[in-house]
Image (cartoon, rainbow, N blue to C red; front, top):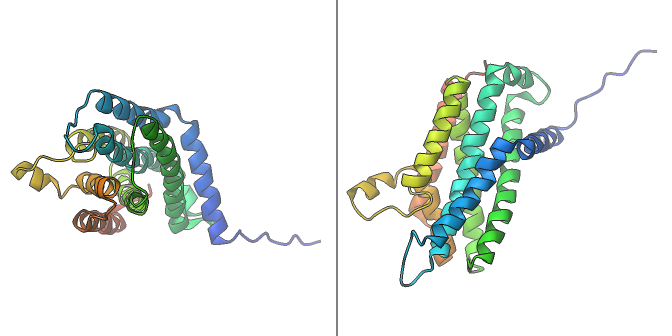
Length: 249
């Protein structure tokens, strides 16, 4: 009897399966969990307890929490995904996977799906910890927070893949970690930028835009259009640059 060739699963099922596979890999990886969850939790606890942001009108935890959520999004989408993809590329796994029925587009979509799954877990864990510590977001803040985290995850995944697809894995490892720390500490993600010339210039950074989108949503229940536009532009530029310079081997 002639064997009947087995047809590949529908594209959506393939993408979901790959996304869940990558999500499990992240959750089993101690280093990625350290960056994605443990360090943001430490920043949340330390910055709020030390009152690093003080205001007569707004409690420190209400300002710190959206910034830590931005830091967590960058950790998963930029640092974690960039490093994983960089080593997959160096070892030849990326080129191999792109030739399977999943295809290049499905592979990237699966990675984005994995990032979204991890970001959802981060939001649940960090949000719960923040509420226990006194964070009191308004119900109107939820749509803006979800929109900002979703767009931020897409943009920083694109930036992470751009880095992973253009330099060696060791360079991706070093650069993604250093840039993550700089964007979190001085790039407007965790702490609001000062109202001076330097702060105005730094507002064009994707980290500052993401931080502002989440802070505005959390504190005012509003969507900040200018930071949202800046974040979108960064995403478009990252996608165009990746299409031009990304290499699979």
